[in-house]
Length: 262
Picture 1 (spheres, helix red, strand yellow):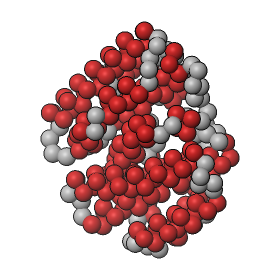
Picture 2: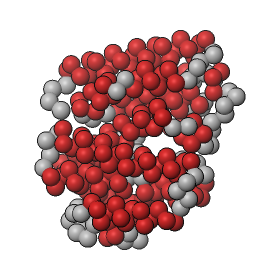
Picture 3: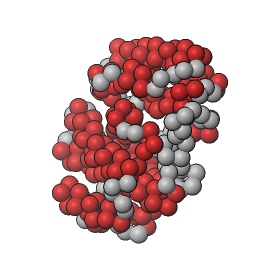
């Protein structure tokens, strides 16, 4: 496979969209960063060149469905258009995949990885290599989501729900808070407030598959950065976010100590 050909095809695909618009520009940056993080994880795992290049290609393609979603609906709501499933559709049902890679021997791996990258849980009955690449792209996607939440504008990250007048005063929903303390990822349907969405991102740590990913979060101080980015003027929310900070740090520390290898 030739990543230069794939990157050229990706740039060609983006000509269909307004790449200067805030949320679209965010997703383009995110895509290229996920490519880097996929390479980082795959390399740390000691994979061969073929699988490292495959991980990078999956990173390049994982959010290809987001751009049409944004164009049609101006937000990231998967209830309106499930972006991973749409990405699989446009790549494989419309045969766009051949513009990115001529060889079809990797198609099932690419399809499964893109389809599963945003699901609450990875589907069952995958081959070992399919499962491996599902785990790599899920981790890479989440690691870059922490960078996005550190650096990008709230209005670009959450175009459908962000309200600058209320964000500092919002509560955390009881179920979201309790699920976090029980080391559970947050289900999309349980998010009610903007702070719930923020807690949902921090809870990505509970779904990281590799020790190297947890160590990356720790080394980049993402827990403190995300908790501290919002000024909580609601005292109850402020106290709960401190509990979330402690819980997250303890979880990462314990996982890093217990988990051997990568």
